Image 1: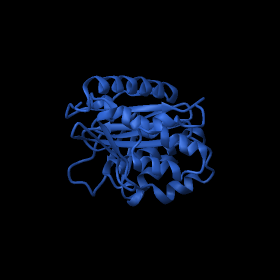
Image 2: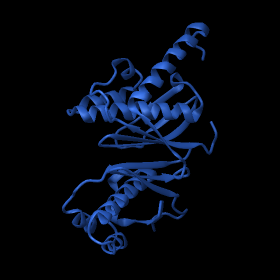
Image 3: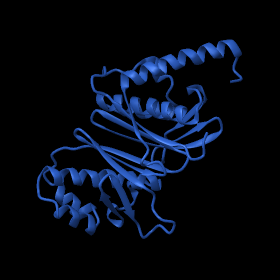
Length: 250
């Protein structure tokens, strides 16, 4: 695996059947399956399922190995990671609405996707959870859809940043500032002595996506969940064929 390798995958769930494929469920690690079982809503179960498969697929692609050689770990309250042929790959996973976002890198990374929706009290939330500089930046934007989108851009940027830190939302979001400059995100954090990572943000219709890490500006690969399942089934058949030919020492 290239020591500077990284990338991201955006998975669309639109039009997908509500039920996960039982055969592909077997690919997921025990901790992911346990998390999936805890979800009550069908949509949440589907997002959890697609996130696990997407993370494994992305890790295998980045490490240039087969799915059989990927060990995905998604411990609760800790950043997910994958072990690929003995090497560790940092992972980040997010999902909202009809999308699942996965990011992988040889260095720490963080990503977040949020659906842009009508939140009447969003400026109250910004005043409570954002830094003063972020709140003032929102006030400078005329009230309406542009300000609401800017609110979600900042929200995804801040979540992606704390995921890069590896601490999740355990740290108050108002203790650091994310500046938006076009498609670039810049973090200002007095708690860091080594500087902040690069960040980027993009929008797809109805959604905001932000990433932090060495490869935050890498192209965002897109795939439907159906296509992802088809590729995993095909690769699984190839792996099984090789396994039967050469035994278990792959």
